[in-house]
Each structure stands twice: as C-alpha cells, then as structure tokens.
Image (cartoon, rainbow, N blue to C red; front, side):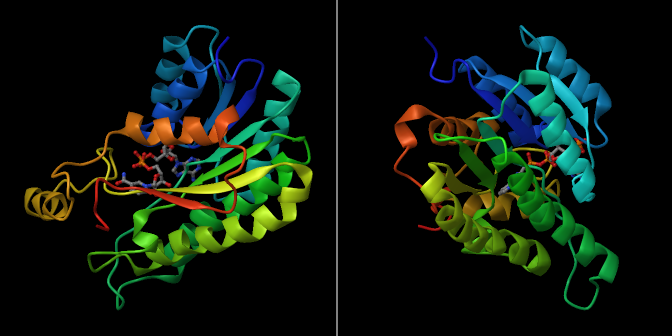
Length: 243
Ligand code: NDP
C-alpha cells in the first residue's frame, strides 16, 4: 500500500510550481487531493486531467479568508474527511523601502500570512489524531540575501512563529504543524533577469536552483507516517544557501 492511502489532502495554491509538484507527489503517494488556484484555470485543468482519479481543483482567492474557509469545507464535503493541509500559495511583490504601497503590503500579508492561519483554523476542525499541517515558508526567513523583499521576508519569518504557536495548540490533538523553507527554486517566481539569476545561483553551495519535485519530496515526508515526532519545526531545503 502507498504511504498516504486513504488520506485526503488540500494544497492551497496547487496550479503551478512547487504547489503543482506537491499535488502530483501526494497523489502518487496515494492521497486524494484537492487544490486551490486563483488565476491559472487552464494550468489547473491540465493538472487535473494528467492525474488518474483526478484531483479536485477549487478556485479560491487566498486574499479572501472566507474563500479559503469555503475551499476547506468543499474538500471535506467532496472527500468526506481531511488529513493533510499544505499552505503553499504565496506571492512576492518586489519593492524597496521607499516604494512599498499599503496595498502591496496588505496583499502579501493577506496571502502569505492571514490565509495560512484561517486555512489551518478551518482545516483542523475536521482533522483527527495524525493530522498534518505544512506551510511553505522560505529560507528568506533566515537570510533575505537581496534588497527589495522586506515585506515578503517579514511574512515568511512570521510563519516560523505561527508554526511554533500552533504546534503547541494542536500537539495535544495529535496534529503536527511544520514549516518547509525552500531556497531559490526553479519556478515562475525565480528571477528572470539573467544577471540576478546568476547572482542567486552563485550563493547556493550546490551551484543550482532547487527543483519543485525536491521540495515536494520533503512535504511528502512531513505528510507521511514516518514524521509523527516532528512538530513546530522549520525545515530548510536550500542547496546550502545558508551554509
Ligand atoms: P509560483 O508563483 O510558481 O506559484 C504560486 C502558486 O500559488 C500558484 O499555484 C498560484 O495560483 C498560487 N497563488 C498565488 N496567489 C494566490 C491567491 N491569491 N489565491 C490562491 N492561490 C494563489 O510560486 P512558487 O511555486 O515558486 O512558490 C510556492 C510557494 O513557495 C510560495 O509560498 C513561495 O513564497 C514559496 N517559495 C518559493 C521559492 C522559489 O524560489 N520559487 C523559494 C522559497 C519559498 P495561480 O496559478 O492561479 O496564480
């Protein structure tokens, strides 16, 4: 039997990049998977069509806490239970200190932080012993590395505190809460400017960006049966960016 047989997972932000790799991996490991997206309807449809048994794609804007709560409810209604929540949706709006607008600040906080909390709050109502909550933070919580992403770094650092706090709330219920902190990973979010891309690469001990499936592998481990004693942790997977 597969490690996640009979488990149900919801991946917030699963249409592209790391989130899509997580959807594929949890599905391969035997879970029934739902995922959300906001704008990539075609990418979401392609992902659904590519997987046998077909995951459930839900359009839900993480900037709207009620939409996030409805996505959790839809998943529970559709599959009858919820065992694994992966908060992957995230946005990076670049801006130097003088240029950050209130709107950009609020949007990053809404998607990267507020949605994470309210998805977890809604999900754990349906989770029992063995439940798994995993959020995709970022290595920028420990090393930002470049100017122009102070608010993004703030939101990702917040996930480390939220993860510890919720591990204490949910430990007595047998639910683990962890934070996966990728380093630079080859997705649409990676820098497109060749000079900046090369500079990022030069800071990574392994000399290359991470691949989405490598991040998904760590998420699958944390979602699975062998990780039951890990909670409140922020696990970095960065090719040595911090080394
Ligand atoms: P991408 O930009 O490639 O994909 C982002 C995903 O999040 C998409 O599925 C997108 O949906 C979804 N999403 C974005 N905004 C919303 C929203 N408002 N509501 C619902 N879904 C939304 O990003 P990555 O795969 O690179 O990043 C995934 C996570 O990993 C993020 O949290 C990011 O901060 C983090 N991370 C990424 C790193 C990297 O180098 N790539 C490094 C460290 C952390 P749609 O397709 O519909 O827009």
